[in-house]
Length: 66
Image (tube, rainbow, N blue to C red):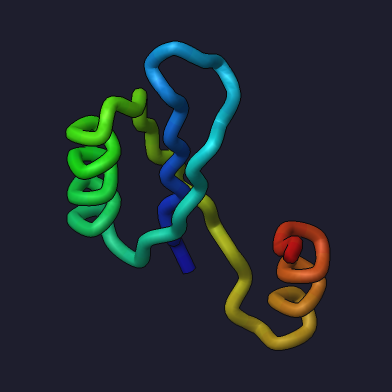
C-alpha cells in the first residue's frame, strides 16, 4: 500500500515541526498547500507499507512513535 508522508519546516528553521500522513496524492497536495499558506516549507514523500498482518505490525512497531 502506498501512503504519503508530508513534512513541514518553518521558513526560518531547518527542523521538521510538522509530520502528517495522507492516503492519496490529492490529500498530500492539499496538506502541502495548507502548510505553505502557514509559512512552512513543505515536502511529501511516498511510503510503501506492507498490507499483510505480520509485516504491517513490524512496520508499525518500527516507524510509529507516541
